[in-house]
Image (cartoon, rainbow, N blue to C red; front, side, top):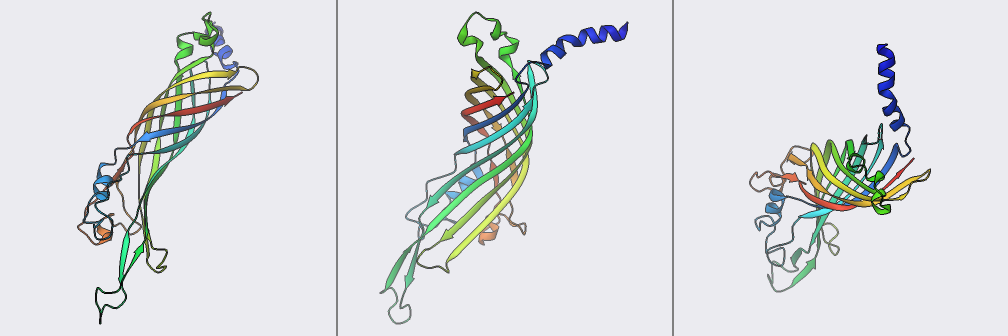
Length: 263
């Protein structure tokens, strides 16, 4: 008798599990705000970016970036799905450094100066991997039962992501007219990565291949420990200045677009 009751109680769940669209693939692009306070403090400090090298005090900073993500999820019932995600985000800034070469420093110092214009690039990036889940509010609110063709096709969900993020910076100086003047450095760290977002979508097709497009808005939490190079030096220590450490803080609001395909 108990077994029969258990089977009867599972029937609704089994029916939900047989619904279409229970395996979905999602791709998205988001524009993120970043809270790179320590990195931006470094980038705006003229002790490291001298006005003798750059044309004035550098002002551009790393405040936002691009995020590309994909996920694959299984929907065991109509209300929630579970899956795996991977995402990549990056941001870059460019500056123009100058190198002043004295062609005759011994006999005519300062009389024959050649100015070499260079390129400076500073980039941050991260790769994040983990688990994702979406709770479908449109199913809880029973939009599909409403007598409205538009509302029937609305997807509304709360999405959670949690995993590990691998982040790094890359810094490079180069002077095209002086090939031997080139320097670069890479610093990295890893930490927990999390996102909480709201998805609002529109179902394009409900046939054998399910598809929907929509918008994302949410908040990302991703703050690393102090970044180090391969031999354990801080970003400023390796530049022969005072040992000042810096972390990467990708935390902030985001918004973007997504496409979902399911079967």
